Length: 174
Image (cartoon, rainbow, N blue to C red; front, side, top):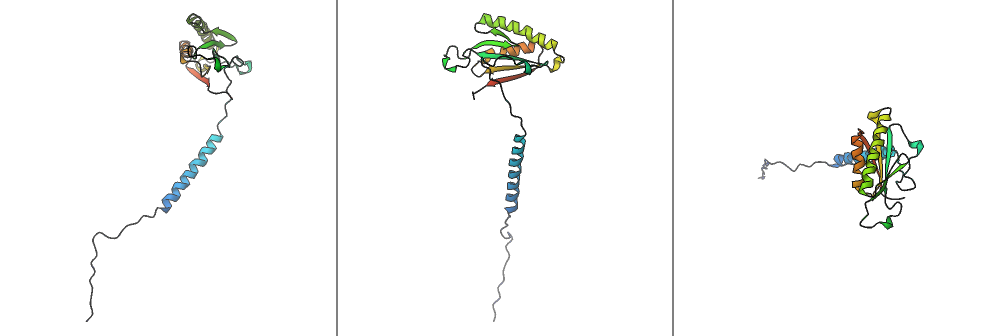
């Protein structure tokens, strides 16, 4: 007599597998796309050449002067010699320079007089601009100059009605 076997199927079913190969292929395709797109976008950026705000270049170049722009240079007390800095005067500004004129900023009295004169110059420049709403100020400073010498220029720009400000800082030489 032959034996018969009865097999019962379990209700849980077998193991389900998921093929990850297409998902990995798509992921690598996306990574490659974003790398190439990023390189192409960065190649289109314009390279910037910033003028160093030291004693030798802290004057305005007449070729760069625009009717809707004014540049204020805040020079460090140490100029191009950072080795002379002491802890007491490490963040001090020597002067504010605007349109060929220099306003000393060493003492609080000099700073207040300089700031009053700068406020008049900024207001007059904005009023003389062909488009006062498009007028802007560029503040150039060395990284060693403390913010306490920068914020008065920002305050004067606000009081003169100049709403657009560019701040340029020299971080390293070379």
